Image 1: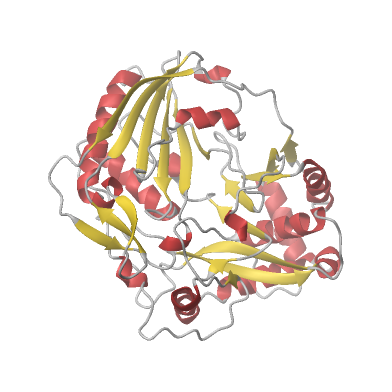
Image 2: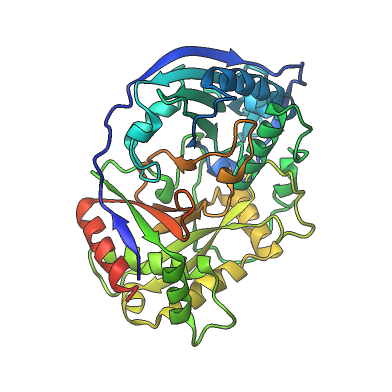
Length: 439
């Protein structure tokens, strides 16, 4: 069928990056000092998201010129995204996490590698050494919400690394931010006017939880560092692999899904159902154990009224499906796809508001065995900067074994890349099941 699992290739352990300059950057014009309300969705994802965007050499835009343009564009962007120059703060009166728009600044770093871009290996493979391509602040109590690093390679290619707080953006709003950053770098107007009103996703008054929410774990207290089980970093030894599905593989899964399912199955639904079965059955087998899969659903268009296109906060909630391991092993694939489809369709305006209200009453956090997060069609690789589109964009390796990421393939390939992190024995079982259930 053309599917493949890329075994751990020979990876550079050290990209030999030298940091040449680190500076704090500020909005290019004065911004208003204020506090930014964070929704109950925002406050759940209180961790950084680290991405690297690779670019081929461009004779008209050597890395030094790109660094200058990128720094200036970021300073201009901080005017329109003033909260990115602020800091997270726990309001003592409301006991809510918020962003203090204090203009303390973001961080801009310039570095250089001793390697050519062609020498650092497969860009689509999650190499832990890519962590050298973005900067982590070591200042306790003064953590910037946005850090950008421009790293040049010997060939003239370069990487842009971003570490941004997930409280600031979800994937879609970060893509819009990048579009706007690219426009500013080209001295053009913003591509999309950002909307920072997080009250659009505030809880109702009084809160009304109108559905049961087995996909949430309820916490009595919410400290700034609390994370739910699926967001917890694992202390176990983990293997990292990329599983690849071609468009033919996805079409084959859609064919398998035909039968009891109502309507046609989407690519996302069949991929998610396939991953769910493999992940649940890769753990020590207990036929009576329940497995809950979580998957991200963008609610922007599902709300009434819909959110503005430029909404900058987190507008993604976790839909879910639950089944016993025995059912996942023995059921027709179409049944598993149906459960995933039902989970996505459950996410109506009222259901989304009920989740948000549950967060107000109980600090509800996503809770499940595995979370599938799709970056497949976010379009980071389609952002048109003055120096061109990225060759590839990828997350930096995380140590969360219960989050599986979907990414577009490298270059002009079709299909999808699935990035998995699991303990070695579970990874071997996952790989075997991944291929077995495709046949």
